[in-house]
Amino acid sequence: MNSFFKYFTDIFNGVKSLLKGMSVTGRYFFSPGSIVTQQYPENRKTLKMFDRFKGEVIMPHNEKNQHHCTGCGICANNCPNGSIEIVQDKIETPDGKKERIIDKHIYHLSMCTFCGLCIKSCPSNALSWGQEFEHAVFDRSKLTKILNKPGSSIIKDITE
Amino acid sequence: MKEVINPPVRNIEDEEYHINIGPQHPSTHGVLRMVVSIQGETVKSLKPHCGYIHRGIEKMCEKDTYQQIIHLTDRMDYLSAHINNHVVCLLVERALEVAVPERVQYIRTIVDELTRIASHQLWWGCFGMDMGGQTCLLYGMRDREKIMDIFEESFGSRLLHSYYTPGGLMGDIHPNFQKRVKEFITYFRKKIHDYDNILTGNVIMQERTKGVGILTKEEAIDYGVTGPIGRASGFSCDVRKYHPYGVYDKVDFKEILGTQGDTFSRYMMRMHEMRESMKILEQLIDNIPAGDYSAKMKAVIKLPAGEYYQRVEAARGELGVYVVSDGNKTPYRMKFRSSSFSNLSALDHMSRGFKIADLIAIGGSLDYVIPDIDR
Ligand code: SF4
Ligand code: SF4
Image (cartoon, rainbow over all chains, first blue to last red; front, side, top):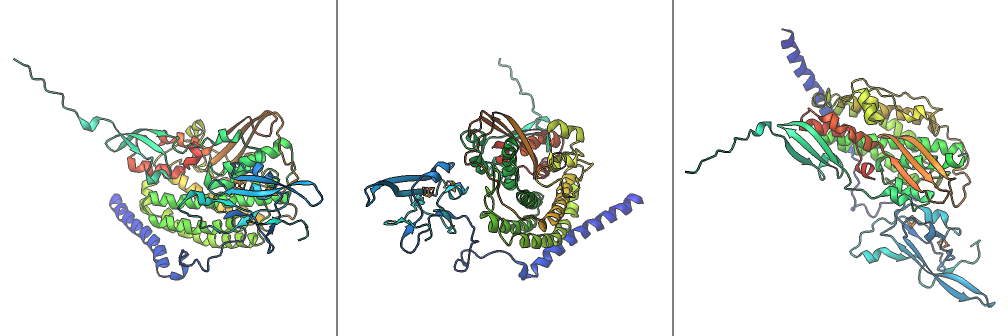
């Protein structure tokens, strides 16, 4: 008699537990307000990443096409996987001194692990994070970027 | 006249049969291959084959400076990335006897606990999916997304943060951080009831997990099984209690121990841990002291020659790092004691004598992360 009774209580408890679970899914089914899925790419226009989002390393330029990079190469030394190459150039200043400046700041986005060491170690704060995240391209060579824009020069005055 | 010899009739029923589970099997959660020897449907023995995602992180560490090593540790157990960063930072700070600001210690502890909750949420979803309930995965992911958003806002990335650095943090927390964490706790305290209603009380799940894959306390110690799996067997092994780091000595939380050591108690252990983590968060989130987000460190960190060992409690158990330094800016040898690797070693023992469907449940309750096993 006892096992007979247990048989039915087991069935009853089992069905009850299943219904309890179903009630949760049912509740979400009938409350569309709780949907959290983002409709990407339909929302591309309105999608805004957080300001600190690490999309890629960029070199901000001001409106006069000037940047802060001195070409010292510290970022390249600190990068754990060689994603940065610095090509330096020598110029002669008006007062006759030779000076090293940056020719090309080459950044391999395809190798970057987004560790942030280059940005943290740059003594002149020339680099920062960009929020662009749609990096898919058909050709890998497109992921190698030159961060200093053509014709750009260095900001001499620190206050600028 | 030729003699006809009849070949002996093979009794296939009694023969052992080897099948491969993985490397591409959804229940292994990565590229792990298990050669399972079965008789009928009963598992006789199991041999895990590791190495499909071996990247040689320990070797790569030997050429990297201590700041650079951090970004490699992210990629071991990616679900507890912050905690992996923490272990290397602690090792360097202890070796150099750097006084880390209070603020850093508070933030690190909070972020570690958030990571633990996020990791367990993902595990809950995957475990539910292994048991045949796909809804669980969606709910687990939905709630984990809240933590991912907190991380993204403050640290810039969702999975591999590289946020800790020897001596402190890469940057300060976002002004919204505290508000968002408090919102999350209120939110998740409600949602964790859903978890119980959907899966914990579910009769199918209970039938499939209770009494399955038993690991006794002695065996857990023998195999070096730690974390929630060890605690489910009654092995008190919480590094946060025994060797406190961060501000774990200032907060009040319980180390919950199981008695059964079966799949269900491993499940319950993680459910309890999520609640305990929320308790820790509540105690800390309002009391973050003001101050610097990093101690003053030299640009080139050199550890004095010698051997160092440091451990922390990662989401899956004890994570240890062993460094031999010869006084240079890169370590001479670096070795990680990863929790998933030791936990996996007990899988053979746990699954013997159970059905192949039970193996999936046991594997799910182990919550292994393959890149942590292979490194
Ligand atoms: S970006 Fe900064 S660290 Fe790199 S070369 Fe320019 S100034 Fe030096
Ligand atoms: S973020 Fe890290 S990996 Fe990427 S370029 Fe900078 S230092 Fe190199």
